Image 1 (cartoon, helix red, strand yellow):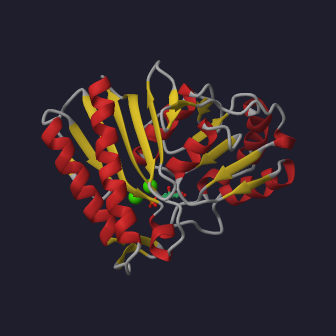
Image 2: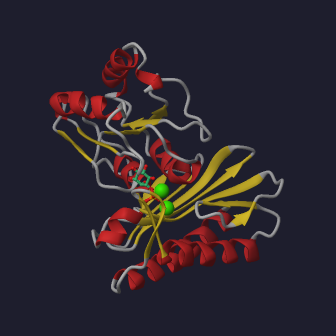
Length: 265
Ligand code: IPD
Ligand code: CA
Ligand code: CA
């Protein structure tokens, strides 16, 4: 198990260094669909990660955001986001990371998130705590939503019917504010490190949240869906908090979700 994490750390650092180097040059941007950017850096980082994982763990499944990997039947599956924060990266805004999460029979057991711009390495193993640059981290002790700093994100294909705009509006008035920094994996690590009290997002993929969700629970936080049901890696919602403000936020989500037809917009 230690071996899984050690190798994932080595790979994340190598991919992170590649991203940091490419960040200095001009970006070659193409579009998956309008506003959904992909750069040469996404592809090169994924190719590197997939090659290394395959070399170390030939029997493991690997699911990469850019379509790389090997989707074979295996108890072990790596979820890889080779560049989380592509839009930031493409615009020269230095908030992005590499993230690798390892699931065993569908449950995340290890995760790494590496931010090369700050040289911050977040790691967690199930049952063994969460760490930032080898120092144990814990969620914040703030007990009240009104004293909390929150975060969220919007998918690249957000529309003005996106329900999250209503959550954003309500929680802005109920908290110290909301950050939309543009990297879901880093947002989750930021909750784990006690810098944000809560984070939620509606339309994420498993590679965005595998590692970060484990970081939060191992740092003592709580991770569910927006209704308080257990978090599912394959579901598209996530709500992570320090645990103390969770029950203060759930009724606000519930009230907005109860509005007629909101889910179908
Ligand atoms: C995106 C980021 C962003 C989140 C989007 C994701 P990408 O991932 O995590 O913070 O709001 O929903 O798609 O495209 O940069 O890997
Ligand atoms: Ca992502
Ligand atoms: Ca990505």
